[in-house]
Length: 570
Image (cartoon, rainbow, N blue to C red; front, side, top):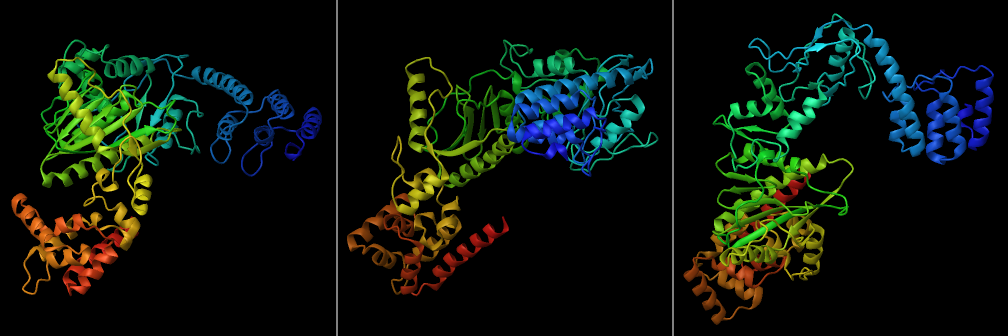
């Protein structure tokens, strides 16, 4: 109770007297915490010298810093969690490590002379069993670090406790609660089908040098001086100096780390071994859209080669090797449309640039951007302590970027294949506000909101504005339905011509011009009228009602109901 008193100077004096008087400092409350936890929280709130002095005083009484509270946290864990003063964190870290070393030395004396952990990949073992890497002979007194990685509730704690019982490993390396495991419990832990097995690595030099060093660095790899994208199994084994018995386990490890990917043909793609510099940008795509990702703290955040490598592996999984090509820090995916992924030269921006030529490929480009964008955001959410922002790139700037590359290649000018200057763009909120106010987007380039997004595919604007949304944002299938219904010549002239008169008082000459353009270019006259005379959906429904076209009104109402259901189900 004395540790809770304020001010801290009073608490320090009373606690000091109690400790000198023989009070037991190891007493714990219902949360499993001794008084050092309370003093620590006081130091975090007040940050005064008295609180820090009391912590130093308590440590002199040999408190057990390896014990945990009911949340599974040590005093050092709690200090980091509540952002205690740096001096306090350093002191607790030092004292905790000292106690850990003492504990390790005591336990190492109990180790048997020859304990070997084998990696079993035999035919009788289920792929659900937890893999263990062979670390050879374990000698008494040798210090090792144990890392267990895996998703929640896959059996990491149970497995570690079993190892502790068998090999006398210390208990302090696991976060969270520790559960007792009897020595006779089965060491193999069943995992759900949709869970990735946990992984144990005991040789850190091997992990950092042979694995991350060779498979994450072009200069250190056998790819140096080559321009290969696919590698055979034997070439990977040679890079690791592996014997036949170890190859499968090591390659499984590389795939688990997403450092390599095995294709259907049995070859391997190694993102870290790709050469820098992608193909030249070509002007085959008349239309372009793009998305950019950048860290909010522009002075600190960078996109690593490893993050891009993981994205490249995800692209192979989604689209196959036939549609993908890769280079260091980038990728190209080609379907009906194409999508180019690349990191800027300063590595502070990641760009997804889509393009298409034929009208029916517009939707394909939108879905490419959406699908790959979601994978990028999943990877970025794993970057702890940093926050990113997403922008929609300016199509005019994207076209100029392509033209500049073509001109440079034409005149033989050698320039960097990467993006040097930061591309401009707009957040979705900026686009939405511009659409609400019916004004263009302000920036380096003046753009209309519908020129930046995909009006017939991206329904976010339509969902946000409802019946006050412009007819430019009609969903694609609904727009096709309206065109199909109104393009057909009506006996009583209740078709697109009448709609043009009601929406914009279209004259006979205007109707004739629209009719000729639709016939010459193979376009829908209804769509041309809606582009020429955009109105909010409420006004469009009024005009269609005035024309007694309930079939068209029903199509719009069904669209709005489907959007509402979609939002509610998200």
